[in-house]
Length: 249
Image (cartoon, rainbow, N blue to C red; front, top):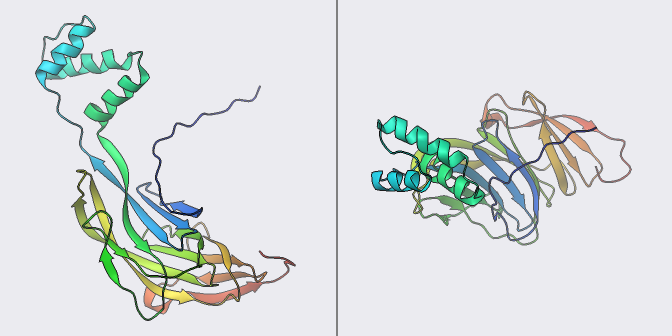
C-alpha cells in the first residue's frame, strides 16, 4: 500500500493580475519571487507580528470553560492552557488560539515590483505598502515566464517574452513595519544586467546546484549556459550554446 502526505495551505497570495508563470523560494524560506503575465516580477518577504499577550481574566475564563483550575505560576497556567486548547474540538478555534497567542502572525509582504521599460531609464514610486519601494514602469505585452533566486540569496534572474534575461542584485535595507503591524526585512533591488543572447522569448532558466552557472531555454530552440560573475559589475558571460531541439526549448 502506497502512503502519501497531505499538505495544509499556509498562505494564499494574490500576486498578479494575470497568470503566474513562475516562482522561486530562497533557501531560507523567507523570500519569494514571482513572475507574471501582467509584465511584472514581484519580490515578497515574510512579515511577522509577535504573539499577543493574553489578559489574566481571559486565561481564567478559558480555563473555567474547560473546568480546569487557573492557579499556579504564569508558566504553569500557560502550559495548562496550551494543553487544553490543543484538545479543542473546534479546529478553527484551536488554530486561531495558537496563531494569535503562541505563534504570532506570518504573512507575505510585497517588497518590490519591477516591469521593464528601457535599459536607460527607470522611475521609482511608492509601493502599495507605503514605505515599500516599487519599480513601476510601463511595458505592454511582455510577460515574464520564469524567475530564479541565486543560492546566495542576493541575486535573482528573470526570463522575458522579449527574449531578454534581466539580472538583479539586492541588498538589505533594514527592518520595516507596515500598516498591519507586520515587521519585515526590506531589500533594495537594481537591474545590473540585461542579457540579449536569445533571438526569441526566453521560457525558463535555472542555476546549477552551487550557483556557478545559469542555464536558459528559449523559443529560438537554444539552451544557453552562462558563468555566474565573481563580481556583479563583470556580468554574466556566455560559455556554451546547446543546439539540437527542433522546437522551442
